[in-house]
Length: 193
Image (cartoon, rainbow, N blue to C red):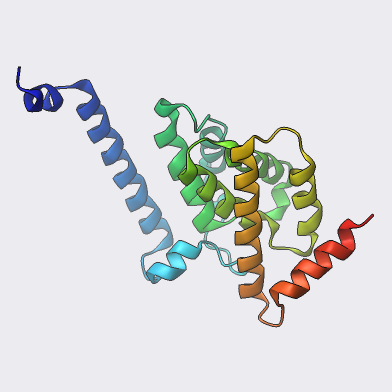
């Protein structure tokens, strides 16, 4: 038969359309919660590390739903479209408040595992999201821990390097007096133990 009629009637096309509609709905919800007044560059940059975009405590059940989505396996096609919006939300909003330390750590660890994903865009989004957790002064130890970990594949190392890149970019943006050289020399000085 005609290949175009086979494609149009296939379950693949219908499931793609449903997934696409779901992603559009999630994007609309994000825009509704966070607003759309940011320019494209600000939206792409994600959380600025200074302000609180929304309080996770304000939306009952939201943190648990996000955590459940982030615990899914982004390398499994059926779960890919569920993980992506959760990573995007966390990237734009930032990490959970510090008063929920255990939840914040679980959230971070769930984001970090996506650095290992074989799909490049997920590694990139996970790296951007994870960088928002490390904007404070204690960022060096978690980075060293990731680099020394044996649980990362080649893809995972790529994800870690992306995380380092985005973290340096965000730190430079937050503190204009810093230079890349200062961050690198500070890291080298602290890592020679």
